[in-house]
Length: 465
Image 1 (cartoon, helix red, strand yellow):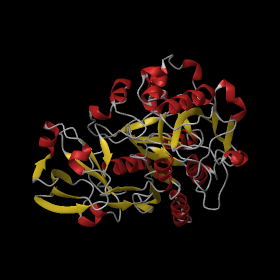
Image 2 (cartoon, one colour):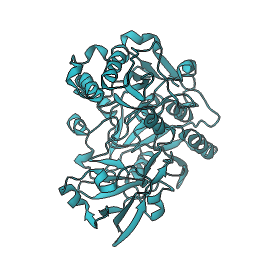
Image 3 (spheres, one colour):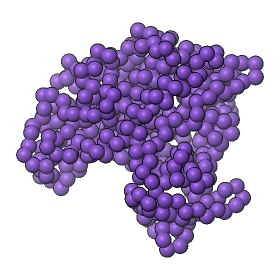
Image 4 (cartoon, helix red, strand yellow):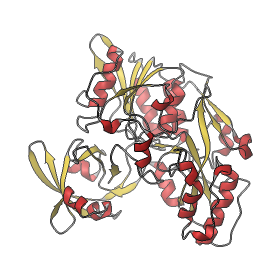
């Protein structure tokens, strides 16, 4: 929900999210708004294209800037939608944020990010090494011994181990290397663990991604009050009890400084962003406008403001260090942007994605087609928005520019970004460390990322397996 007053729309309200959007409301279900777009009798490609243009002409945030194209020139509704929205991709406003999906796939994404996989995220560093950036607690990879910072040397897809460089030379896809979403599918992994090479066999399972990447904790500081550390992976429905429990656990410990880790968080449900805003800002900004949602000229009646609401477990932060990367998007950016007028904030890591808009979900009646369409933009309580190339580019935030080296446990001083956040909180200045051009904020590099409805970038690459 965008506000308590907006609850009547909870059935179809969509979230801010880079990779997908989910419904607001407690059930997570989404139905088509009323009035409905043109209803068609078939679920084929032509009817999907009719459905896309009917919805877009009514709800698309920039309906009057869409390209004029002939639908007959496109073999799929996806390619037609991409052509319609192409002018908005040129200036970063809609970088694949509008897309087609299915009801089942979409709703699974917003319960707990359920998927079939090994349960890890990896990235490729500037030296071309494939490094584990996150191993999901309880998943097969985690149980086998995968840990953050572990290097993947080679993968055996059934014909012996092939190095990652050899896979690249073969132009192999991720499915070629790691296999598709098949429960029980096995791969052999050759890993570099310290000075040893280890071989493991891991099988894929149905997984629910834990919403918190590390247990919330109070980080002790000599002579100073502890710092609250919370690392949220995604704004899913499963994050609601986790966040409530986290703040209840941290309450009463005299915490006024927080490190909020959103380095790989591409967004999620607005409903969960609202909760996080209340828990972080409800006590210091109770009753003030956190953000406003604005629609196109045809839908101004839908514009609404969300107001901070003090909760029993709300903290009273004076300063928050947000750990961010180019994968930090959407609801994560909304959270940071909305808190900025009320709390002293610094970003640690690199600039964010720049998704200042949100999608609604539209279902084609009688079909399994769901359209995620950019339908509104957000501005904070002071009326600022438009951060289409990242929050830092607005000039309203300080960035302690540091490179994630994918080593060190989350929330520990062995992790470069956690240590950098603590340094700013302790000393009031950014730590001095060598910077990498890979973390630089510029539109050219961001435009080169394969940002689509199903991909989320993180430096050169970032995938979940």
